[in-house]
Image 1: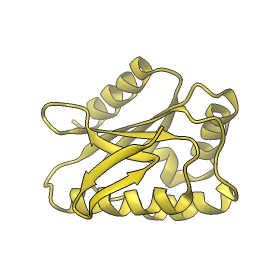
Image 2: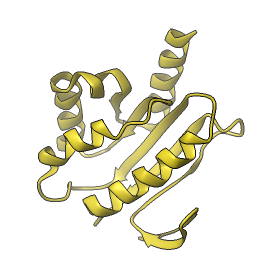
Image 3: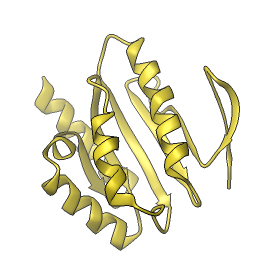
Length: 141
């Protein structure tokens, strides 16, 4: 599965795509499919961050990894870079994964990397992801 993503850079074929999940444009859905690469990931993060630069409010994220079975090579070395690229207006990111290993890795990472733990939680289902975002929003009020 590939996505045709239309963004400020034009049309690109990618394994990572994003778009608004809510009518009020406060929840972004990022969908990831195998086999994705770190280059694709960081390119899409850059586009996402440029979008957030244009908004005056916090955006929460549902990152849908439900079709992902494994991470690209050297995943742990790239996580710190990914955390460093988190935009100040990114709120809570609920990461949906049906893969038990990826879900467990997510739980470990939010404990090991404090900044990630402040902005990310693993979820097993989409419904759980919405509950995570709702709790985070209630805490921001």
